[in-house]
Image (cartoon, rainbow over all chains, first blue to last red; front, side, top):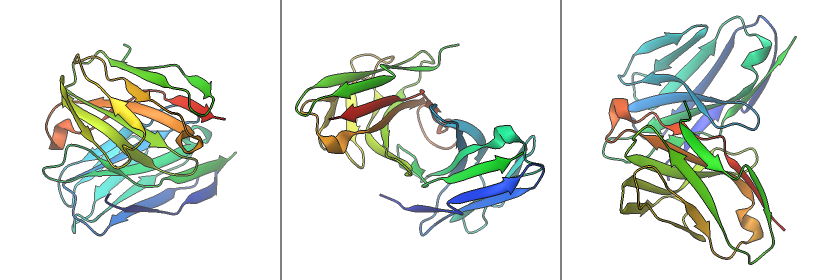
Length: 111
Length: 115
């Protein structure tokens, strides 16, 4: 299957700091999605991106669809303790019936 | 506001036993998926279905079977449980097609241990 590489694998930050993470691929995707997974729960969709160069916000979260269509970025501003979790990127390719998921970025916020 | 419902939440099996993981969605989504998530890893697609009566293999289908007799239900069956199948299993659903219909909605998972 397609390989989506997320970095960093894990982050420890102080409450109030901003966070940046990214997702890269060797293949082109036509849709990028960002999910968050809390312990013991399924992934929940945060942001969906459908066009190269698109910049979309959801509260303190901002995500961008890279212009090469091979990467995407997620930023979290002014982190709070409830931001703790694993963040997954996922990509969709034209003609495919499923998503490909990254390996996740584990975020820890220190109060 | 149920969304995607998975049962059971936890299960311990002995090697060689069989079981069925249940998944139901009430959003009238045509597409449904089964993933497994191993510790520290992302989600790997086991099987998916684009509608009742239609199923297709994903990335890691060996050791599993699925059926899709109704739009709402998509059970996953393990016939001969093996330790390598210890994982957390997630079911998801989405609208048909691609692009803006692709965001998938996930259940809360079934944590399965094979001993």
